[in-house]
Length: 148
Image 1 (cartoon, rainbow, N blue to C red):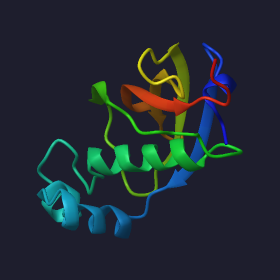
Image 2: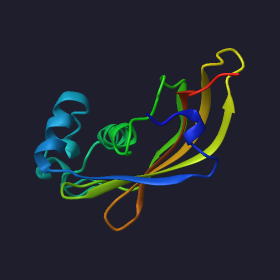
Image 3: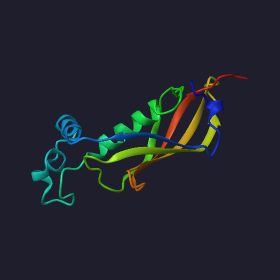
Image 4: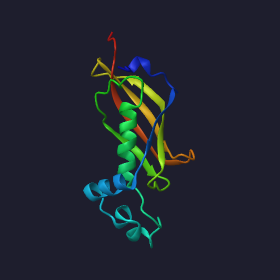
């Protein structure tokens, strides 16, 4: 497990990649975000996207999976109190290959729970052209290996 102590300030890791298929895009949209531009090329034709595009929530879900499974060992996560500044900056299309660039921007020990620390991450999801398609700031509660 990767613990609080294993995450130095300014550490940057790139996780992934994962490639989206049209079937995955449509399946996710049918279940969670059934907007016409996420369901078919025809539905997207006269929209900003012009063709089938993945839901931003699908992109966020794939990014979360990369964050939890993309390291050499799992993160000793104890959950998260939330995130800020979620931005979908560019469309994601079937056939795109995504990776997640995750940077430790701040960290501190919990005052009320000595078994954990709070780690702030800047998360940037990139496509195969290294264009940032999504960005967010998140805080993770991460178990400590040792307590004082």
